[in-house]
Length: 206
Image (cartoon, rainbow, N blue to C red; front, top):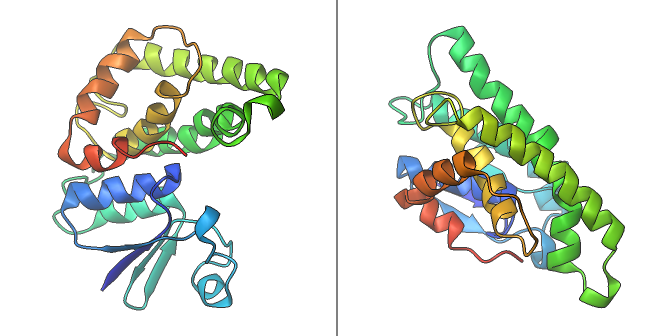
């Protein structure tokens, strides 16, 4: 039995959902986090002591951290998301997974929270603008990189596209002015059309 704990509107849970859907693996998703609660319960903390989502549970095997889940799915026998054999190519995948976690998603955090989850009359405008500027810088970097490659980590779709793609989906759909990034837009259109991606990109932001 494979279970994925986490709410479908969590950008980190979406990475795991996309990965599982790409591989066609059966799973049961259990709402947890945010308004659903659960993550503070003792039984859940026994699975994930951080009290965060997602958590992947396969019988007695438990794994948390969204990018670790993506790497695990990539390493499954016969995985269509398999990591490159060549060390430098594999390192590029790791580089972009880390960039998404440390740079792109954190840059837009205030924009997301203030514009999606805070009432309009209570929004912190300076925080939104600072977050927007950081996000634009990250988007510019990604757009420049994608000028020379079909996918984030090379010529083949992989887990770096899933991780960065979930973050890009959020950035491109925030109700805020953005500079045009033609390479980023081209890449996003390509990956968003994938069958597995539709499960994620069709979910409204909340």
